[in-house]
Structures are given as C-alpha cells and as structure tokens.
Length: 129
Image (cartoon, rainbow, N blue to C red):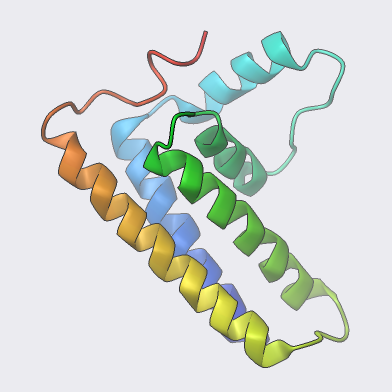
C-alpha cells in the first residue's frame, strides 16, 4: 500500500516538475522571490515538493496549474502520511485517492499542453509581481 501511494505521487510530482522545467524554468527562484515579497514574516516552505505545489497555487482564475497545485499538495500530504505514519487508516482509500490524484494531474497537464501551442509563455510571468 505504501509503495502504491508513493509511486502514484512521484509519477505526478515528476511529471509536473518536468513540465515546469520546460515551461517555467525559473519557477523555484521566482517562487522564493515572491514568497519573500509577500510573506516576509513567514518562513518559506522548505522542501522542493511543497514549494512546487505552492508555486502552482499562485495562478488564479481557474487556471489548470491552480488545480494541479491543490491536487498535488493533497497528494503530497497523503504520501507523507503513507511513508511516515505507522498505521494508515483506510489504506485502500488512500491508494485509490493517490491514483485518482495522479490521473487528474496528468489530465490537467494535457489541458496545459493543448493551450501551450497558442502561448508557450509561463502562466506566472504576468501574474507574479
């Protein structure tokens, strides 16, 4: 069960990470700058996984990246629970949810790729200020 949840999560994580590297190559640095400017009293998320999902959440207006960020961050929490907690309640449900999240993220990335032909610009370039 733990392996299934983890593999589903990493499929989604790596797919989004590769998409961001290709389409928003400075996403991590941009996120850190945005965080310091908008959350100066809060420590930035430490792990790259959390930063990536939070970066996706910065886009508003129903953009697929926002949905990807929400879904990915929930999947990250489930993966952490599966990896580090001794007992996992509703383990069958956790596996099903992990695969659903990975599938949903893949579908949302397809929507982004379909829109990329019209504009290959990173969706954050006009929204990060």
